[in-house]
Length: 277
Image 1 (tube, rainbow, N blue to C red):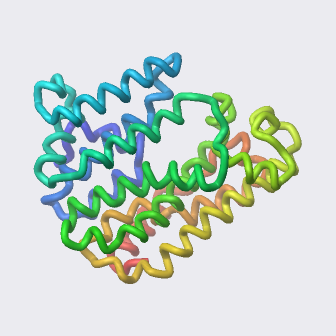
Image 2 (image 1 turned 60 degrees about the vertical axis):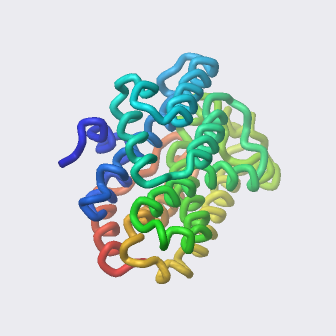
Image 3 (image 1 turned 90 degrees about the horizontal axis):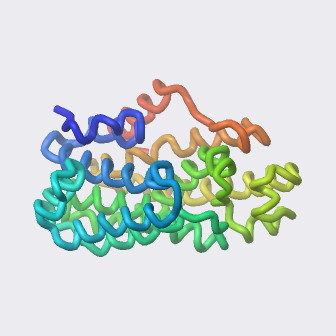
């Protein structure tokens, strides 16, 4: 049974939605709560007209999580489910606070300063979500996969950011790190404006390479992931396919979102569930 608050995940975050269906039934409600929360804070930019209302929404989530009460949730279904999940699994509130702080970046048009900053952003968002999911699935085993979660989350988040390049450019955002752009011979302003496309393509290729490096670091140790914890990493599984799709588009990746057939992603999830990576 899929809770009402999680129904929108089918469209908002299909990879994570599908991964929950492979998780043990007893954990699915908690995973849906974590992923619905992530989808909600990740889409705030799309639902506000200016950064200030977005910051206010992020602060509301901080207050709710810190208070930890049904009253603080105010009847919000995702917030109510998230608080129940945090309490039932004793999840660290600091991880949610860091995730909300990282999402402030989404609300503004400041360019991503460096590769290190990008990896930090990915770590506080996608990687942290993997670690929280692991705590739900196997609290004792979760600490042993912290490093893997770091690499897997970076690969997943970078793949997602590359696929969203057209949306970000249309909004005046640039998640391609400024130091990578400089090495490629361009700037954030040129990248957003669609100028100097050969240099922009070099920057995209360098970012794909960064994502593949993190995937390779994860894949090299992925056999160590216990079967009970595989569900935490399943949403990462399509990342290499996305990198390939962006690469095939070439300059087209600046104006068209790269995607792959749903059946290919479902097959990849099933294979990883059964055999690992």
